[in-house]
Length: 369
Image (cartoon, rainbow, N blue to C red; front, side):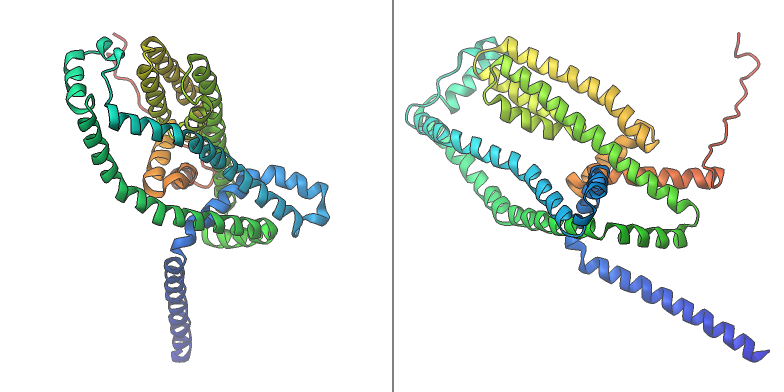
């Protein structure tokens, strides 16, 4: 009897030691790889997004699935990201000379009060401030010198640390994407076995829901954002906003974040006000807010909420909370995480079937009166 008790006690001690070792090694591994975890998550998000097209390509060219198809997919993703960036850099380089000439002219001659200031509220106060701070060469030179000094540290920090860090993350994301696509079937099988052992029968449904959530978020954020940018690029072109295509591209990127496109509408309107086209400025901003309202209140709730099975409030919490915690990556990870948590909550309340109990709240007798 004592030997049996010692045997079970020894097995229990071994299980506890094994669990403690596994938890310790997992935490240590996460700490070591914390710098590259965003790259791995980005690679997983991209792999989930392109999986339907990639699966068709594998079925059509099965002999190329080990090296050729992963390489082609990785190169296409790199071009998809780098091409707009390159266009933006080229456009910025074209305008650099004109900007330098304008700054030189402002330092030498000052900036006279624009005519559109007279049509603004508090025009006398604005004109007085402008005359005092920008109208004379000395005042304009002082203001530009102050702005330049305040931006030197921030610019050097972004170029020195942020740009290098993001380049490394992007490069490692492409490497991780290549191996993830090449070993996709093995990864999926291992994750399925491990999740089933940890979560039981609910693992398959949670995994499927996470995949649907990521794809629905991509449809609702990326595709709708691109649509908003395309519509507003046409509006910018009609309203004669400077650099309409570049502003349209930036609007598409900003529109992926809820309410982010309004910042670009404001910039476009400010540029039009600077040209004296106050009516066009108001029209562009108003039309942009209408486009954002339709996208955020009708299109996105259908695409994201239908895929994640979440009320749009929790979708919004996942998006904004994800952006606050993880940056751009949080746009996709946040809603998927909220969807998985909501599924676990539904399972906890209603059992493995996930059906929520019907509300039972009788009306008081005098409610009808």
